[in-house]
Image 1: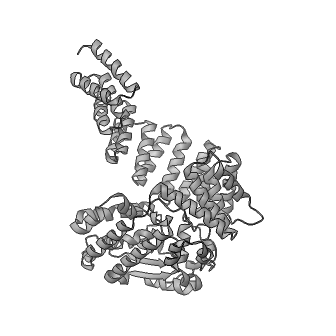
Image 2: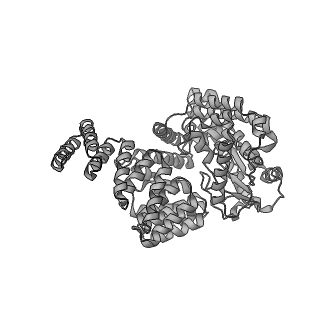
Image 3: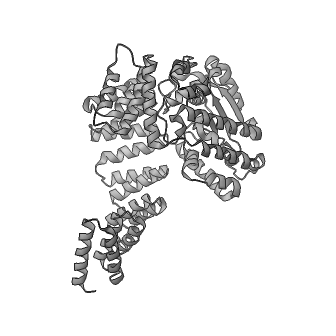
Amino acid sequence: MNLAVVSSKLTQLGKLIRVKNLRKAEKLAVQLYKANPDNEQVLKACVLVFAKDNQLKKAVYFADKLLAKDPANFGYVANLANWCLKLEKEKRATQYYQSYISSYPGNARAYFQLGLIYKRTYKYKLSVQMFESAISSGFTPLEECYLNLALVHGEFRHEDEAVTCLEQALRINPGHQIARLNLATLFQAGGRKQEAESLYKKILAQAPNFTEALIRLLYSTKTRPDEPGLIEMAQRQLESQSASVLDKEGLNYALGKGYDDLAEYSRAFKFYRLANDLQASRIGNYNPVETAQFVDDSIAMVSAEWVNEIESQTEIEPIFIVGHFRSGSTLVEQILAGHSAVETLGEIDYFMRLYNEQEGLLTSLYADNDANVLLNIASEYQQLTSAMSKLGNRRLTDKRPDNLLLMGLIKRLFPRARFIHTQRNLLDNAISVYFQQLNDLSKYATSLLAFADYDFQCQRLMRHWQAIFGTCIFELRYEDMVNDPEANARELIDFLGLEWESGCLNFEQRKNFVRTASVSQVREKIYTSSVGRGQNYSALFTDEEKEIYF
């Protein structure tokens, strides 16, 4: 096909794309390619039409041919990597940037983009290395590098380094509100409450519609009758046309919290109902059939013999705090944080990602008993916790409560693992969970009926774990802990085979970072005011909810 004909066909193809006749455009593009497989303009047209139609595998096929013709073209590399990420081919996306950097070092944007992929795939050291290379190579805007570097450090529990990076980002760009918000969040997590609130207020003074700052400020302070300003601000923002659906979800939770502070329980419950309905519509409803089936499979497939077929010889002795959110897990973690032989790593979502994102993997693991796959999972988890650890202790805590679902697998992977099962009065626990905007994997949290079903399944599964490795599980009730902290803490420390240390109960002196819904309470002395909290709302339950909880 001569060049004039090719040019005419490409013009025709462009017109088809503009009028969105993609089927005809794709057919013409393929015909052109078959007749002119080495023509760069034809290849570009093929990439464009298939990308427009979101046929990314075909777009990648043709873009690869373009890259082979011009390997120094960073735009080709960036497009290919982006499409591979959308196709969930993260390894291939990584390879495009690695190959480019190897051949053409010094490209700041290549370092930055590869840093983002390493961050996404939980490769801490590599991600930090890439962002630092982007900074030294002159990436702009520079503050974005420091922001992402801070996010990586924070994700891997290196909060001091995260604070340093955020402060540097703000020195470069004092008006960077996202950096200021993240810095305020870290200050709050580290017990620097007044500094955190000052930053939230500064954000709102400069950007009154910055909803997330308003929400976090409402959560960090206790609303008082003589200071209703934040509630009024939140209500105005809720009614604003500029508020997104996600903004409204968060604002409803925050308003529920504000009215709960004021003991206006009927108004609080109205906002909590709205908030949970919005979250459920966004993340989907809890599926009791799927949960029951998973529990059935776990009970049938995970036996004492399977758990004790020790394949992993890992050195760490992890401590998993399991149960429900809002059942005292943060209190337990704070007790352990005061012991010199234990390092607390907060909530690690590694096993929950296995449970939620890789459908069928767990039951196939139980059935196939593939030692190599099991060893790889143990190795990945140990690498992750090693990157998070600052002290190198063998005793590391993972406070992700819903790891309860996977205790059999965890015990198989880590024979020296210990479990602390926190429990709380069902009504109090349900209310506390219902009143929190938990992560998007906790679908059971958006319905009181769903939470009751989830609790039933967890109790059923826990009885199975108790039957096959119960000596490795410590049962701890929230009510017992707050009524007699020292006696229960001593029992807990003894269960772990450690010597008692008085620092275990010195919460007010603790300098660690805590990033959970209990962040505002963990610096205080242990209190009992949350016991019986659910009774404040009992009259507002539906008949079906009352039948379950009363």
